[in-house]
Amino acid sequence: MKINYPDGRIFDKPSQPSLDNSSAKKKLIFGDRGMTLEEEINESNKYYRSHELAVIYKKPTPIQIVKVDYPKRSRAVIKEAYFRQASTTDYNGVYNGYYVDFEAKETKNKNTFPLKNFHQHQIDHLKLCQKQGGICFVIIKYVLLNRYFIMPADNIFDHWDAQKNDGPKSIQLKDIVNCSIEIKPDYNPTLPYINAVQQLIESRKEKK
Image (cartoon, rainbow, N blue to C red; front, side, top):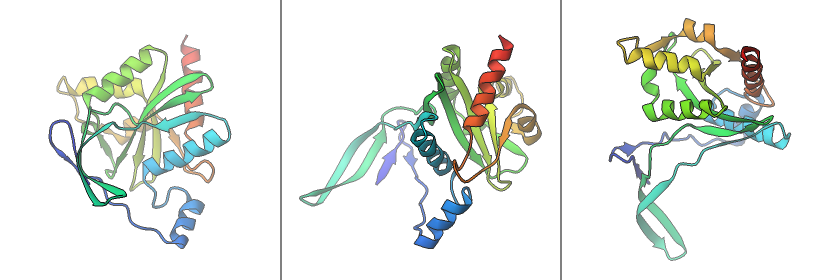
């Protein structure tokens, strides 16, 4: 199926390799190995919901279907579609009475995180949510280093605004380490990021 962005660019969804039973078991046992960040977060969210710790979901992206084929009368195949609007952030929900909204990003760089991974509408959205009291952040995964960071939205804003004033176009790993909460992949949940969210909440209380 071909899906297009609102400006006409074609969206190329990365192909997902098929897994046999042994591969699936390895993923279950070793957590992050071979899994994308999205898969790790989705599995973690299932755990949090099943244990009534948090209710957080990946946001659906509205799609406008423009071309459908009917190879069989009982089955339709979507051939072309467009994203109706630019997406905001990847995930939102509720934890312990707090609204949570965050973006998930991966990079294969070892020392930097390019700011081009973000879009202005995502930054604007996070700023609006934070003004309403939401807990906003970005989960960054350094794929080759197998390191994960919860970076508070305020720190993303600082780097984003600086680059528009001839500042660096990327964030150094050392800067992310200094201002973020590093988390380690685990078994259940696969990515225990809620612990870091609780730290962000406590930090906010201390500032008041």
